[in-house]
Image (cartoon, rainbow, N blue to C red; front, side, top):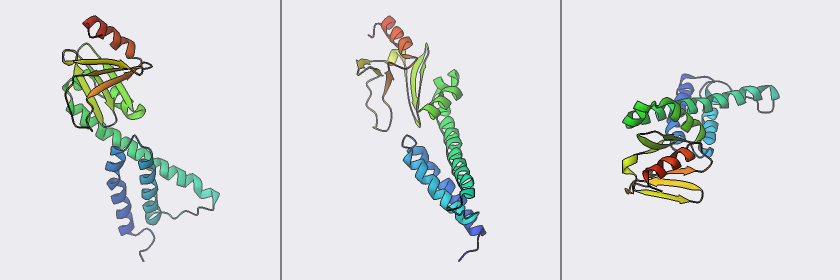
Length: 183
């Protein structure tokens, strides 16, 4: 049996922490995956650094703090990857300023950009942007404005912008589409 705090256990903790980042990023919209990954990494943490007594109320603040730090690590690491991926993927977004909309999309789940050049919907690890001239399909169904260029894409890739009525950019987008004669 390995000693408490052995180098091998510490390396396993760090390996599992970094190994669980991709699934957490991929399934970020489902909060069960980050929670399960956090519990698994916490288990390796307790083998490596500290074995809490779950019956002692004095250990619970450190348990909760450790789990919170692991979740914060996932959040920051995820945003960093999200930012680098999309900032380099879109010339329009790079000119517009990628940090603020990408941070909003990472925190809230979705962000919309409506400019004179393009429209974009950014989700966690997914994005669809379209120039005004490329819009071929405009639908208003179930309280959502759906805009697309009618190009078939893989199911994992967004191929339309779906803007609900309660989003701040809805009125602006609706006005622009009316001026263009698309509605």
